[in-house]
Image (cartoon, rainbow, N blue to C red; front, side, top):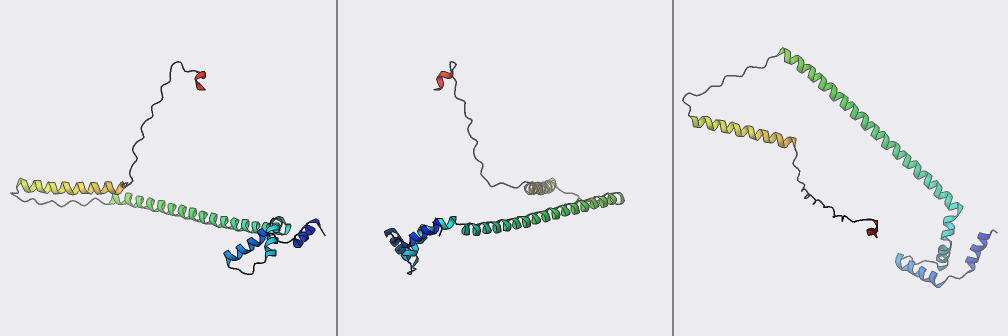
Length: 186
């Protein structure tokens, strides 16, 4: 028998201590499991560290680590494949948009040369109109134009609802005496 096995056999012959008995009672109270064996508790407490260091346990832990690393590598591969696919889709979309805008420019250039803008119909003015009605019409038109401009500005520039912090006060440097030297440091 090896030295470790003789140590383990001595533990089997040794009676559980008061601590082991209290621990067994505590386990039964906390878990509700009534078949707690005091001798098993004693051996578990004493041999836990030995078991963790044992080659059998280290082999199982190494297998689990290898399996976890392999699973992580597969996840990383899938993530990279998804990112590559997204990049390719974005490039294809950008290329399609560029082609579409190029075609639109070409048709616009061709259309400008071939077509002339339609002439505006002449507006009819009433004779005998008062200056008040003309001024009112101009005010309504100016107001509508101002609303359009305001709508364009708000559409292009989103309004921030965040409150700004007040600016920090600028710190003034402490005055340095003219006769300051290394002796004053400490």
